[in-house]
Amino acid sequence: MSTPLDTLARPITLGKLDLSSRFVMAPMTRKRSPGGVPTAENAAYYRRRAEHGVGLIITEGALIGHPSASHEDDVPRLTPGPAEDGWRLVTSEVHAAGGRIAAQIWHLGSERMPAETAWTPDNININGFDQLLQAYAQSARVAAGAGFDAVEIHAAHGYLLDEFLWPHTNHRSDRFGGGPKERATFPAEVIRTVRDNIPEDMPLIVRFSQFKERDYAARIADTPTELGDILGKFAEAGADVLHASQRRFWEPAFAGDPANLAGWAKRLTGLPTITVGSVGLDQTRLADLAKHDADLVALGRVLITNPDWVTLATTGRDQEIRPYRKADEDIYH
Image (cartoon, rainbow, N blue to C red):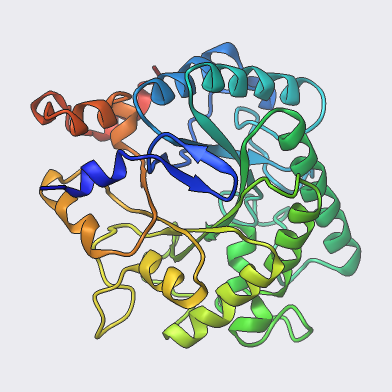
């Protein structure tokens, strides 16, 4: 009898991109890129996960080349020059291990940024919008030039693009604010810009969430209809895959229906989806994966402690999987 893990260990094709399995490495900020430049240590870190059956690796958030994106110096950037060269080493190592890798394009917005310098939906002017779109376009071109197989736009967790989607942080009265569909206008413009600056057959993933790092109860959509308004604009703008981030993948997205956020995203748009949220941390929950209509499953913290989690979980060696602990975030191997 086939199990959810058996199914996930099988190959899948996203557009024209062949993946060895349906397991995805979720993006996790590790802060190991001095001066924003990926290193050989980063390349070895990602390669190790590809060697153990992860079909698609999504990098930690890589910052666009605009000063408002972040003030942190050890988070990688996705800009021309040394950072692009560093990413080229990363992609070549992952490819040598038979893996595929996507660059996650990121702007922090006001999350973890000083209030006096943070760019937020409410304080960006027209020139600022143009600057941001140019920076996203540049990062998209760098990703393609550095050998990435796909790109992901980070529009989740309370960062800049998600701040546009959340009524708590978007009070604009122009075309970028209002109802759910209007609040999705600028994120959709970013999606369209990135789509226009990468190869036609390169998959474009968009990560979204209800919860924020600053508010786990936050919602960008109170009903499936509102969520459909937002995700419909993403699809129209050129999104190929939707990465629905939850804290716990098994929780229903809306009352009265067992579907999780990825299940609803697929139902509303017809696009392939990635589900994520404590996958593998609770082994008793793995069977629940079969209940949710997602095409791929992303693993996060469990891959910090266990680079070989996919190999162990799919070959009956569960007893060798080491439980994740908060202190494990200091591990980088």
